[in-house]
Length: 274
Image 1 (cartoon, rainbow, N blue to C red):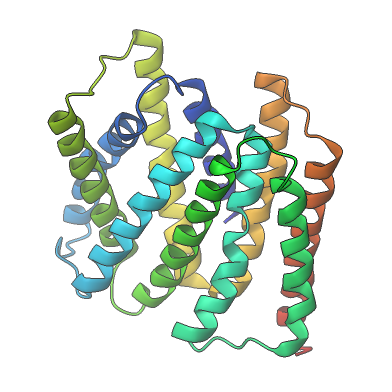
Image 2 (tube, one colour; image 1 turned 120 degrees about the horizontal axis):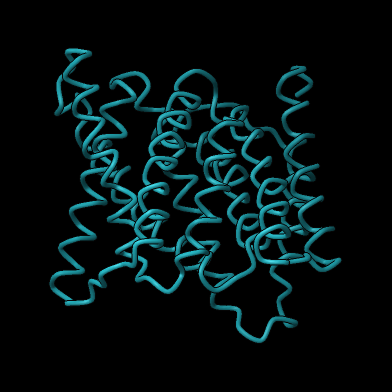
């Protein structure tokens, strides 16, 4: 999960670098390496391309694509640290969804932790202080979609190979985004430097999806999700180094609240204190 978090932070950096390209085009180029590599890996592993739990495979892929569109848009208009911090509310949505749909335990004593995380989110979003709240709300949509995707991954561990799960997402997101681009006639021919970034984005995205999917297959969703908070640290470093973005005091405190809340919930779970 730490590897996946580093990859997602690198992806956020690259998406921000090509923010002048349409979001759907970024999604399409991100899908190309996986569309070429994953089928070969599936064939070598002698696994069925169609999978077993087809409904959840399709459902998870479309939800993930909505989350990608929301997340990529947010990264083009918000600071890297703020966007990634809001995305990392997804583990808290995951806790509730995992309790409802996966019967993973959720207890009343966790409620103060969730409230603490919510306060952290408010400090990052800064309602009333931001002139335009729309990007923050879209970031929350992305976080919600991520949570649904994570819970779906945990459910699919019982029925499908992780390569099949990644393959579904890759082809659905890649082909749907290309179709929309062609219908809208909004495809832009990227420059050579943009092309290199988009190809690298696809390779890093493939590694991110494989490691993320494997992580949620190996351990409970409410424990694995803790390590996604390392994205905030990676994103803060990248934002400072590449965009000279220095988070304000509200964002720093809010991100700290969210990371501390995730750690406290992890400690409760791992020590069986609740």
